Length: 171
Ligand code: RB5
Image 1 (cartoon, rainbow, N blue to C red):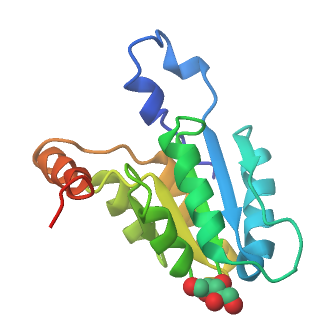
Image 2: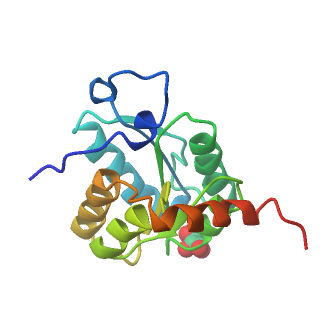
């Protein structure tokens, strides 16, 4: 069954009157280790009328994950998409890279519950997956839940603001 996706970022944009009419936008990126899962997820999202931007990589040639994780993070922070999907072999390196971008809250996800909590409590905006570690169906379900879960705000809001403030603090 298809999840009902929320338009979380659009809802927060005062210039958007009726967010329910707007498509959700997702930007994807991977290194060679995540190429196949990234491509499958891009197709999966496209089949659900989600607007997808694929930042690569596009071939099996060996590439470095920092470039692609950072590209996904920059696109989300720039507002080109509501959410990012970053895939590498483990889901780890590309997540570290995405989190280097100010405003990104990227999480490596292996299960559906973590996907839900990362949105509800942490307002995560980039989901990272490890092609060599996660099953395809779990990856799709986790992605569905990630996109469909709204940030709860409330007691979590200050914590998320504190998270974002850390990047601008100097030692
Ligand atoms: C590439 O072989 C692999 O190191 C990369 O995809 C990722 O797992 C790094 O964290």
